Length: 114
Length: 113
Image (cartoon, rainbow over all chains, first blue to last red):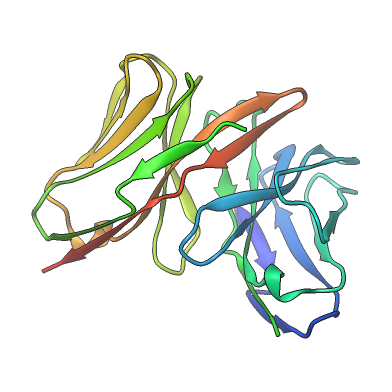
């Protein structure tokens, strides 16, 4: 199993550009999440999904959008990129609602907005 | 929202020394999870604690959940260079249809020979 796969690994965007961060998992997890991690900081939840077709906002959703058309994929869309969105983005998934086995994280996308 | 504070923010030890990081909350926690993130890497789940006073061990790592369920600790005995990284505690909040993980600020551990 590949687990959680994120692409691209690195990206540089110019202010005002848009892009989609891809996330796919092959563990048949219903729950998926997007976090951002600023340098030297903890992780903040952007959006999450409890299943195909169902998404909701996390702590820091402004400037982002998500969709969940399949169980496997949970892309994160950045519209009109701003320097404040320079961060490392992690996608994660979990099997159960309670997350007893923890979240499985992807390797991250390092985004720089210049 | 529920917040968890971790101390210290950073610790530098020599290989073989012990290390402890603490996670504190002002409110009672239903559970707590611990993750390790290597430099340049992604968080990796270590363990979950749910019971008051619970103690779990993984080789040189000992995890404790306080009796009042307001604090937790991770203790590493005889650190090795492979222990380098940032250790996060995280609280799982079950709200409506979803569970959401809120992370602490993390403790960065540096180990030198």
